[in-house]
Amino acid sequence: MEAKRKAMSIARWARGNSLWVFPVQLGCCSLEWVSATTARFDMMRLGVEIVPEPELADCLWVMGTVTAKVAPHLKAVYERMREPKWVVAVGACATNEGVFHTDLVVRLDSVLPVDVYISGCPPKPEAMIDGLLLLKERCV
Image 1 (spheres, helix red, strand yellow):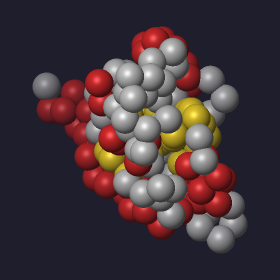
Image 2: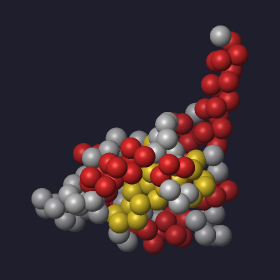
Image 3: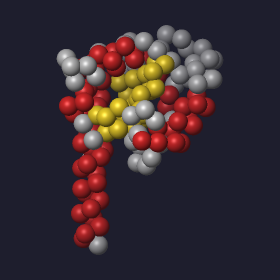
Image 4: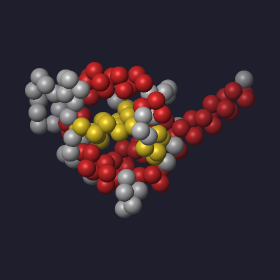
């Protein structure tokens, strides 16, 4: 029993220090995501690995406007991810419909369980890094 608890503790530590992120770029927030991953801010130094397929990811970053047509596709992507999995809502559009507030746009948390909200239109790279650090705290 003690060995199992120790193994789980090591696994939580590893997950918290190495997040495999699948970014879904639906709007202008993705431009700031690109900035956050370049040399100036270097999000990768904090243990982020960007992956090309949701099956490899344990973290889904959704940036931009979530429309009613996109929502089922986001659910499908989320279902393809491995456990444990986390979701980050990035930008005003993903967190609270932004400036749109129409029947065509939905909040991300009405589609998926969101673990971290990063506000801003678009959020600065520093805010994205703060959100990443908050998520890492919750993972451990």
